[in-house]
Structures are given as structure tokens and as C-alpha cells.
Image 1 (cartoon, helix red, strand yellow):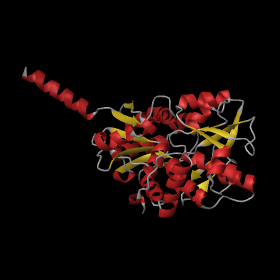
Image 2: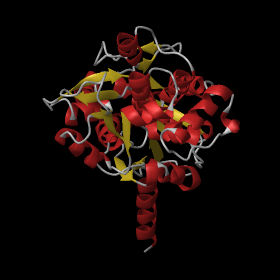
Image 3: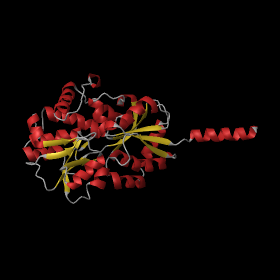
Image 4: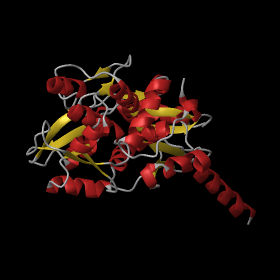
Length: 344
């Protein structure tokens, strides 16, 4: 009996030591972040040497899952949080429990969002019908500027933009294919899957990606459509002013932290996960699998990811943050709040 107990104890200890990792995704199966996580987890576990399971925790505006990580799950050394752009927007203008300052960034893919339109519309004259989903505030502000310039008026917003609320991601995609919406947006993985095959759709603009010194760089997968250049072609000058500064702030948080992995600051497995990620991004086969579906975008890992996060957090200044809150309240009908504690 004693021998059996010893064997069972050894088996339990071994199982506990090699317990599988869990990635928390704050949305339903099939969403853009869910698709991305499935791709990355499959490759990362090859280099981590342990199984990764994906747990979906959906909820309103994809906030509850991240709140759960903050309040309950980050103490588990085998739990990794997967955040997306909507979480970055909510962090700026909503009362949420999670706080990027409290975690250690493992790594992130420096991604873009691609905005598409129906080929049969004239974006200079037609009203844009667009779904108001999680993380789509930068699209709203960009479309507002494309349609109205940088002259902030509610009248122009209501005349030129229909900000359609209450649609799920699946409903939004179907409505765009049917022509019930005239504009849509996706991350690269979802764009390749849902929009690129649609013969009635074409790229309108992209937001670009963050450069190493805070500058905006053209999308490496879809060059030539960066918002500032498309805006200049429309209006004859580059965007500037209140709306553009608010847009630049929220775009940095949404895109710069769009697909990121986090653990608690004192997680003893952090270095092991970082080493596995570095191995993954240096493995041609793993990267080929990721690039095939998610696009060829740069990665920032370990200390580079921390520096990237710190640079984004430092962008929060009083005027752009207050303008962002005012604009999203007045034009988009969001219950935005001013959070002075975010100002660096």
C-alpha cells in the first residue's frame, strides 16, 4: 500500500508540474482574436513543450474575460491572457478592472486593421453604413474624418455615417456581404478569411503599424492604403487637429496592443514562455504557418514587448484623452468616462 501511495504521489506531482497552459480569450469562438489565438497556440506549444488549451470567456464588449484574468486567474502560473484591440479602447475610456501596468507582456504581434468598403459605393458622396463593434472606435473616427474632414460637427457625422449598433461579428460579416453594410473592418487573419474572397469588396484604408520610434509605418501586407495617405488624396492635406489627435491615441492602444499575451508580473514561468516565443518566431516552419493565415507582421517579445507597452502607455495626455471621451460620447453614443489616472 505504501508503495502504491508513493507511486500515486509521484504521478500527481509530475502531472502538476507539467499541467497544460491555458490561454484566456475574451470573446466567442470564431472571433478575430479567437482565430489568431488558435493559430499561434498551435505553433507556440511545439516550442513550449506543453499543451495549450484555449478558454473563451465572452461578454459585453469583450471586457469580462480580461476582468476575470485580473481578479481571479492571473495568480495561476499556467494562465496566459490574450488581449485584443477592443480591450485597449475600453482601457482608455471605460471603467474596467484590468490594467496593463499590472502585468508582464510576454509578446505581441504588431498588427493592423484593414478597413474595406463595397465596390459599388462612392465614399465621397454616399453615407457609410458601418457596424459599431468592440474596438472599432478608431474606424469610426477615421471614417468621420474621411467623410467630414477634421471639422468636428455632429450634423456631418449624422449625415455621412450610420453607426449601426448591436451586431455580432457574424451578423456584421453577413450584412456586409449582402450590402446591408457598406463598410467593414477585420484584423489580417479575419480579413484574409472573410473579406478578401468577396469580389464585391475592396480595401478602403488601413491604419498602418507602429514603428520602433513611435512613427506609423505602411502595412507590410497591404501597402499603399495607410489612412493618412488616403485622407490626403481625399482632402489635399494630411489630417490634423482635435479629432486626429484623439484618433491617433486610440489607434495606438487598439493596434499596438491588438494581439498580446500577458501573465502576472511575478509569474515564474514568464521567462520560459518568452524563450518559447523567441524560438517560435525564429522557426521558419512555425512562422510560415502563422504568416499563411495571420499575415507577415513583426513580433515584439520579452523586453522589447515591455518597451513597446511602456511607449504606448506614455502616449496618454490630458487633451487627446478628454477629446476622445467627448467625441465618443457625443458622436458615437458610447458611455465614455475620463480617467485622469491614466495620464503619464
